[in-house]
Image 1: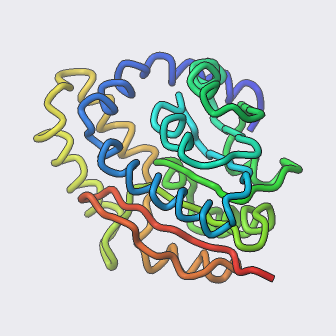
Image 2: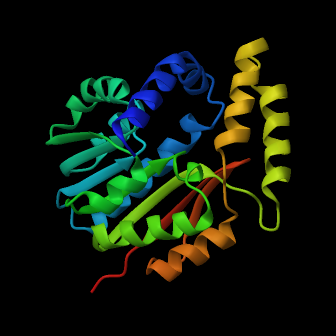
Image 3: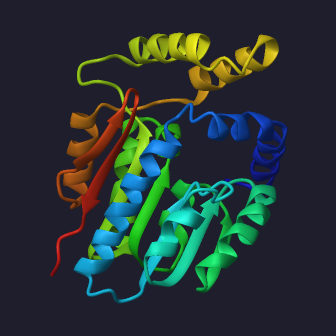
Length: 242
């Protein structure tokens, strides 16, 4: 992704900052319910790793609002956050100071980041970003590239939107739009239509069976589902030890 595209996404994100904050504040995408479960998975991984400090990547880190709290429970060797919007990374930088480890923040597309960065990770976390990659062949490339960056025994915790098995994208979008219009009551008028338009234009979720197939072909374990809150689900994939 070139600099013009990054700058455009940064402007879009800045214009949508109030929407993002409202979604977090009202837990419309289940962040408050999901993150304690993800934190438990991260702590369990640290214990299984002998409580040695681990290197963490967060793909689509945004402001790191929840991850900066969640990761305080685990010993960290380093944290790398990747997001398209440089302005929001500056917000993240302040929040992440509490981690007490080296922090690297990269203004990059997550697909490009996993292909080009020379760093390695033990634990990778991504929240509501993967469904923006399409078609599924590109998700397959993503899973393979990420597999090559994660150390043996490492894990990938994926928070995202998922279709039900056998459900079409259009059926998913119809249901998600209905939920937004009836439950996301803080949004009205033009702002509501902007949220719906974003989903219809940018959201390409897979069903669990298809995504597991892609992951396993890339070398990952079959993903285990940690929790589900409606359309919002969490899966954990692991890389076999040598």
